[in-house]
Every structure is written in structure tokens, then in C-alpha cells.
Length: 341
Image (cartoon, rainbow, N blue to C red; front, side):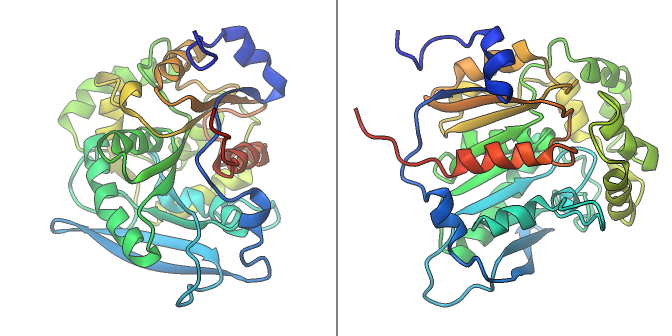
């Protein structure tokens, strides 16, 4: 049995170095942190909007990077952010004046990444009547990556998904392994066994089966940051997120809630061939440690990590300790190449 084959010990995950346990090999050739950050360190952050089309359905996309693209310049590593069930892509580019940086897109643009995101069908600017389940999200990503490939010249991209966004990213990686480079799954859930959040959510299963939309008001958005461990997110950031989201109304699709309460697992670890960083907040109620350990131990790629972030709950992107998430994600995405043995 090799190091990559050994099951993950639970106590090793809980105790490991304060941020969890790192296991597995290193990546194929990737730029180092210093090389990535040095691509255009003096440039201002540039942004642009795009539209993808999934059949007749328009899907809004957004991009940030250091400096506008220039003809003939080398392409930069692409990091595509995939949003979750109750908020749109605004959560990845939040402005909270006087409370520090909350735009993870800004942060990773400064690191030298070409950052992209999108509103999935019936979220944000992409309103329809659909329930936007995980399968629909996969089709959204298929449409979006064609735009990213056209604009960047790249064929493979890193994906970072949070909560059901991680399920979308994982399900996409299963069917499009040639497009998926390194994957970051934050606030992920595998089978959902023992999850207090999903147990409570399942009480409304009949509603999710019969309705394509559900109520998502300010209090519901606040609950994302308070339901597991109050104090792990700055209330000002949560209010800023609510302000950004409620401009699109107080309803969001039910599809991912239905999938997470009735159809798990929707991501089969043995079919995810890319390197994976699995990130769990210490107090996250969406998935237990054993649930994630089982997923982690079945991943076929030895280049994998499972990290638990202290002092965080479900949304690591909006956590007071979000810098911990930035750190482990940046390290994973900029792994040096392993020496072949």
C-alpha cells in the first residue's frame, strides 16, 4: 500500500498543523506563487462582462485580472469561481468599505490569475423559470468555458466552487475532465450523512419537489453566516451581500436544495480525475468530517488535500478568517511540479 492508498485518519485531519491535513503528490507544471504574482504586479485590476448562451438562455459572465488583455502576451492561469444555492456570483466580488478586502476575485487577480465567474441560470442577471439544479449548472459551465477559451486561448481551467457551487464544479469535472485543471471544493458535501443543515432542509423536501423557486430574503442571507457559529463572519459583510443580492429579488431556484436533500451523491469521487483541494470550515454544518473523509479517500488522483480551517463555518469566502482560505487555495493552485519517480 502506497502513501496515496492509505485511508485518511480522522484525528490526523482534526489535528494537522492547525489548518488540517495535506496529503498526496504535487501537481503537473504550474507557475510558482512568485512567478504568478509578478506577471503584472503594478497594474490596476481590469474587469469586463460577457454573455454565454445555453441554447436560447443567456448567461451573464464577469472577469477580473491585473491589466487589460494585450495582443501577444502570455495567457495567465484561469480561475473560475462557481457560486452556490442562495446567492449569485456577487459573493465572489463583494465590496465592504472599511472592513478590508472581501472580493476573492480581486485577491486572486492580484496573485496573477485571470478570474472568471458567472450567474447560473435563474440567478442574478440570468433570470428564467428553471429550478437551476446541479445538472443545469453543468450545462451552464459547458457554455461558459467556451467563452473563457475564446477570450484567453486556454483550454484547461482551475475551478473554485463553494457549497453547491462545489457540487456544480465537481459534476462538471466528471463530464469534462479535459477542461478541468485543479479543483477547489469549499463547503462541499458528499452523501450528506449526519448533516444538521441538510436534515433541517429536508423538512421542506415536498416543497422543493413542487416549486422551482423559494424565498430568499435578508434574514435568510444572514442565516448563511449565523446558522453554524455566530461570530465567524463580519455582519457588515453579510449586510453588503444582502444588499448586492436583493437587487435581483427575494426568490432563488430550488434545484440545488432538492439535489442536496434527495439526490446525493451528485459528484462521484472516482470520476473526478483532477487534483482536488477539499476545504471545510471548522464549524460547517453542511457536511461532517466522516462524510468528507469518505469522498477524499475515493479520489483517484494522489494530488489531493483535505484542509479544515479553524474559526470558520459554512462560507469560507465571507469568513472573518477568509485569509486562511486565500492562503491554502493559492498554495494549492501554485504547486510546483513534482519530480517523477
